[in-house]
Length: 119
Length: 211
Image: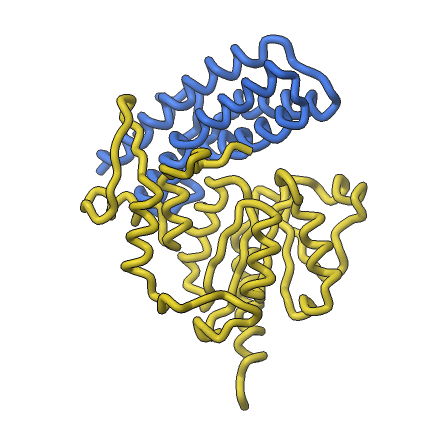
């Protein structure tokens, strides 16, 4: 796996935290299973202007994106969380989050496949 | 926070299955691939594990006798291992802790909770010797949990550590790091955490020696 082929995540960030491929795959699996669900909840919270839910869901998703080295969406989620804690909404956040997470998810899935076949 | 188990509690994620069975996510994946635990895939290719399949596997493979009921300082299992309760709502972070701490091969039993209320129940039932707590959690947050535990005279023996992305200055606004607790800033320095747990486990062994 060549980390330079990844633009939305940093596989080396996760690789530094784990002991072997199986652990890398386990963590990536958790991300793929849960991140989309949390994003959906976050988007619903943004549509409803539920600031408490926005803060909690964005914090939860940020905790996962930071581990896979998805720096851009992590920064965006931090802004969304901070704004929500002050009772504010970031215009266009939903679309930006959806597009970004889709790209992150694709790369996490690809990193799982590539590390499985790496010698 | 969205829970990994659906509202009808019919399916669970690989992560939740791992926590229910007390094994790693990798082991769950191997069991599913070996057919030991039933699973199916959505049209999108995502694996779903029926909760009943996980519970059925747990019943037939549990190391504890069926009559085991956790109670105040239960006598089963024998308290030869220090119990470490980790309260962390981030599932990836829980898996990271499991991978790291298991790799250190400490004489301890790991217990995980993803929220403060369940943690209070676990503390009452199993009275862990070591408590590792994240601060920012939905519902009862880690700070309130720790202050509740500290206020209980029965917890005086418990080693308590805060693991948090909040800096000490942010905690200062809430009263600071409680006296007698250890603070680990995220990203966690695992060498420091290992040293802390080794010391706690050694203290537990000395405390339980009969001579």
